[in-house]
Image (spheres, rainbow, N blue to C red):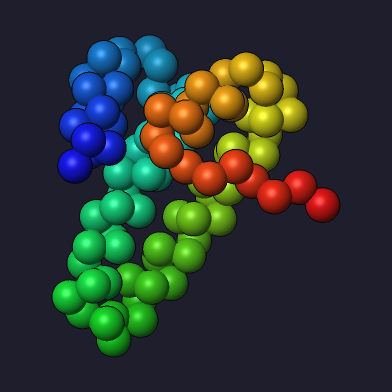
Length: 90
């Protein structure tokens, strides 16, 4: 569970000023995704949670695409720290 401890460290380091930053939003979405994934392992027929998970995944994907266009170095650091696969580009 190294990922969870890292995410909690990042969220504790962030001030209220930086909560709108792309990195903070991606970290918070990743945290929600992990919680929903563990929930759905127990409750396979919870379709509303599945829908919520897909919506959060889409939001995180759009934020990561934005970050990769604006600042490739920050994007590479973030996906390396969170252990997220790189977005497939068309």
